Every structure is written in structure tokens, then in C-alpha cells.
Length: 327
Image 1 (cartoon, rainbow, N blue to C red):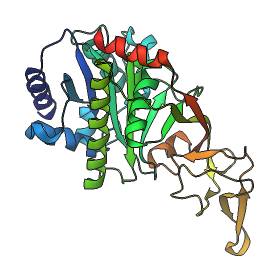
Image 2 (cartoon, helix red, strand yellow; image 1 turned 180 degrees about the vertical axis):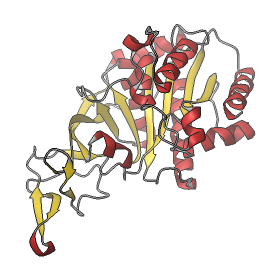
Image 3 (tube, rainbow, N blue to C red; image 1 turned 30 degrees about the vertical axis):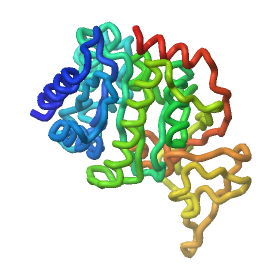
Image 4 (spheres, rainbow, N blue to C red; image 1 turned 60 degrees about the horizontal axis):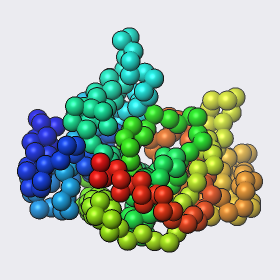
């Protein structure tokens, strides 16, 4: 019912602006079924079209994983946001619900789909103290152009996820341009007006930035600050499986804050309940993100380490985004 109402809302949004051969933006909420704030926002937008300004773009809103949302679970069979694997789309074998859903979304709204979209925005929330941020996968020029525009407008940090064979198959990678909007902290399955409002602001800024880029009027900053993924760390374990240590209390809630040598990282309990502290022994200046994210426990990720880098905004990025939006 809700997914159908969102499709109807997409038609309303499209009727308010000149029709184009393809929709400009695929706006996905509920890729993870227990992340409830972005779906609530899209439902509110369906009821009140003036809640968010599409800035003249055609927008196709939808629920990524309606079955998981109905069950109030992150996923049914497997993580949908690790299921966009083109090499699996041609398989006729019995498959997980999320693999079938990923294939269906690409066939419907992918760049060669029956109702194609140029850009994908995937809306998420996190239990970690990440604030509002953007996630970019790889270094596609159009992605970096959009991230630059949004960072220039809102100052949001950008997590550049790349070179991680353990984590692949992300939704936005199947579209010519795409970003993830992450907002937190918020517990799973809990509505929070602050998360809704921060999500709304980030979405509107993305839409405004895309509209400006289509007019070749984007206000790009001179530099893009990224936090490039280096690696992920698991909790200490005994015999390869049993958790033997926890994140140190000094680390909790300190996403985006650089680590210094020997900063306490993990803590284990030893005799008489006294803690044995394990210090950080990585590279100086590493910046942790997604610290103690609840959904990553099953993936054995206690936190990820990034390296802050400053890149000049390139003309090729702007050109790639402008050409995509005018195609």
C-alpha cells in the first residue's frame, strides 16, 4: 500500500514539472527495513507535497525493501545494500529475496530500465554518532561533483568507501551517479524528529545541487574533503569467535575525531574485574567512523578507519555531472 502510494506521489511530482525521457532522481528509503525515519519522511512528503522542494527535478521515491520494512527487520534473507551484484542478476537459480529485489529495481529504474533514473539517492540512518554525512563509493566524477556541491552547501563530511573486498554490491553503484545520505545517531526502529529533519535538509540540498548542475550553475567549492576508507576493525576475540573485549568508553560517540598513538581503543576484563586496555597502534591521524554501529556487529566491524584527504575539485567532475543531467 505504501509503496503504491509513493509511486502515485512520483506521478504527482512529475506532473508539476516538464516531463523528460527519464526521471532525474531515484529517491530510496527503507533499503534497510528497521531504518524508519527516511520512509516516514517520504510518506509525509506523499501527504504534503510542499514538505520538500524538488527544485524542478522529476523524482521517483520508493521503499527499497518493503518486505523488511513490514517485518521491522534490517533484511529478510541478506543485506539489500550488499545485493546489487550485476553478475548475479542473470541467474535463474533460487535466490534470496533481496537479490531478486535488487535485480527488479535495476530492471525498472536502472539506466537501461523501463523507467530509468539518472541519479540515485539512498537514505539511511545509523546508530553511530556520525551526524549527517555522505557516503561515496569509489571515485566516479559525477559522484564527486555532487558530493562537492552538497559539502559546499552544508559542510557535511564525506566518507569515501573503496578498496574493501568484504563490502560490495551497494545500491547507488548501479546508477550513473549516486550518494548515500547517513544520519545518526538513532536507535533502530525509532522515529526521531531530529533525524527526519536532518534527512529532509540533506535531500533538499542534493536536489537543489542537481538542479543547479543541470543549469551549469552549480556553486562548487575549490576543494572536497574526503575521509578515505582504509580498513575496518573487529572487536578482540578469543579462539577466533568469542568476543573478549569491547570498545573503550573513550571511543564511543567520537566518530570523525582523529586517533593518536596509544589512544585507548579496546578494553578487556582480567583478574578481579580489572580492565586490560589495548591502545591504538595504527597510523597517526586515522579517523574512525561508524563506531559501534549496531548493524555491523554481524559483519564483525567494530569501527572503520579512514584517512582525511583534501582534493581539488576538478572540471571533469562538473562536466560529468552536467552532461549526465542533460542527457
